Structure formats: structure tokens, C-alpha cells
Image (cartoon, rainbow, N blue to C red; front, side, top):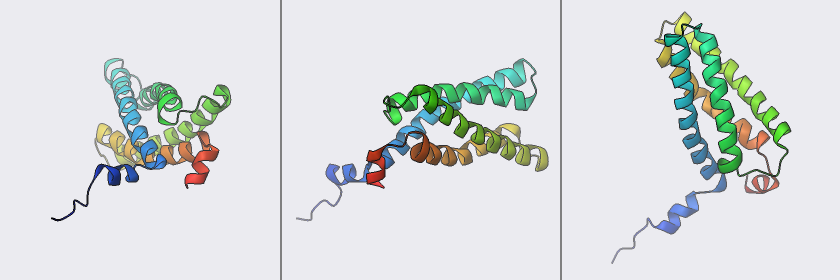
Length: 148
């Protein structure tokens, strides 16, 4: 009888701490995406704010929400000082916002791609920056260094 090469134990071996954090980061990112898009739409289309101001509001609200979730679930880091860690997280996010806005500007203003398609592309690209910077810098722990 042939052996089943796929098993639960083989699946669990794929779930390294880094990969599991990446999955949780993505799930949290979806909640941030909903907050970001909802507030961006509300302030841009309903309140007639400038699209970059509206983008900044949506992005900032998502950052605060994501920080709370990442600290308590994704990276489970309640040992670090919240103020310093949030400052680092917010700095990484500001760089992400700059990248996000630059991509939107390039796609929407220069290449005339629909604003929301441009925003979705920017979020996808900036996701990888945000995960890397947060995993290796903001929520860095000695345990992670051993697993790399």
C-alpha cells in the first residue's frame, strides 16, 4: 500500500514561526484593508476631502488598529515598551504611507489607472515592506533571531 506523503505532521513542519507570523500579518492586514478602504472612501467620496488626505486618514486608522492586533496576536509581544514600540511601528508605517502614496501617484496621476485599483496595488506592494520591517525590526525578539 502506498504511503501518504502528505500528512498533518508535514503540514505543521511548514508552519515555521516566521511563516505563521506572515499568515497572521496577512489576516490582520485584511482587517486593516477594510478600515483603510472604508475610511478613504468615506472621506474622499462622501466628505469630498482631497484623495491624499483621505488616504492618510484611512491609512492612519488602519495603522493604529493593526498595531494593537500585531502586538497582541501576530507577534505576541507585550514585553516591549509600548510607547517606543508604537513609535517604531508608526515610523515603519509612515515609510509605508510614503511608498503607498508614491505608488498611487505614479499609477493614478501619471499612468491614469483607476484610483482604487492604484490603491489596491500600492497596498499589495507595501505589505511586503511592512511585514519585513515589523518582523525584523519592530517586533524583533531573540527567539526570532535563532529561527532565521
